Image (cartoon, rainbow, N blue to C red):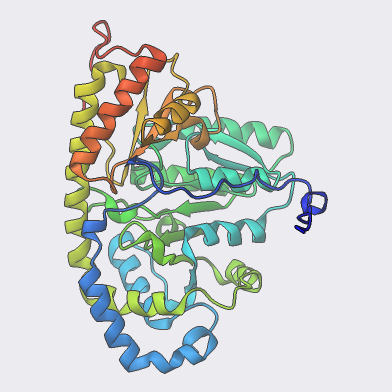
Length: 413
């Protein structure tokens, strides 16, 4: 006799996310997530690094923290300290860095340290879905600031800060992805970064700088990190190895003043992020990172070119976009009547997965006909075939024509 399954439903607390669907594998043409190019993952180098560091230091795995303490494997933090100084102008020591389990844990730790239900934060109107979802679950009032070709608009930010001050509200932070913004691919110039800091100091609001895509600026030249430009230590900076090496390693980092870092550490109750991953990354990156990343950027830029060519060929001016300044995403605008939340379902049935725009924006109506395409993981052939299949779905489901003759093509340069 089969027993009746226990019903957990009455025990679930209010406010849980919707139930997850069972994993059924990636779509045939997958343009979702932040996956990278498997062919450019430095597998041989990582294997060599793993063998070398395990032979030399493997027995330290018997100790929580690898005898480096709760902030993470010291050689990796030392590598990061030198890299941050060289690439982004950040002057910090290994003791100013906390290794975390990807940038998502960094987001969770910053939020747990600073936020309480009902607080207000400022973000870019179009921004990382993981950030928006977390703020929603925490009951945070999120205000989106429009972007232009140079990232978050400072005139709009000034207006919002002025209005909030008039109402007696001080935001807990201004969250920005200034270098290769997700999903728009913009890079905030240094002059605008300085203006952001001026406004933040004027209104007494810290800046939360998410720099996870900064290694992927096409020409390798990026502005100084906002953290490095601050004179008042009012910036928390996070980064990741997910886009430069491999997302499944789940290794990120936080750079922050000790006054706030010391409050994050007690909240990191996982007994330390994956130790083997930290050891291998330190061993590989110290001699190889500077040579690996430019080759990765060249490969990703070639895939972006294939994606933009495929969109032009299949959609014509029905698909509008600006060339991103780096990264792995393209933010695409389809005709206004296309609901990308509905397109997502129809495309998935045809073997194409996309990220609908409303999931990446504080303004669901503005983003209703937009979508984010990740071009890093699929091959060049899969990109061409997948965009052709997506265009066919758009024609069948939404009547999107191949070309719209009365719309002037935007510059793709």
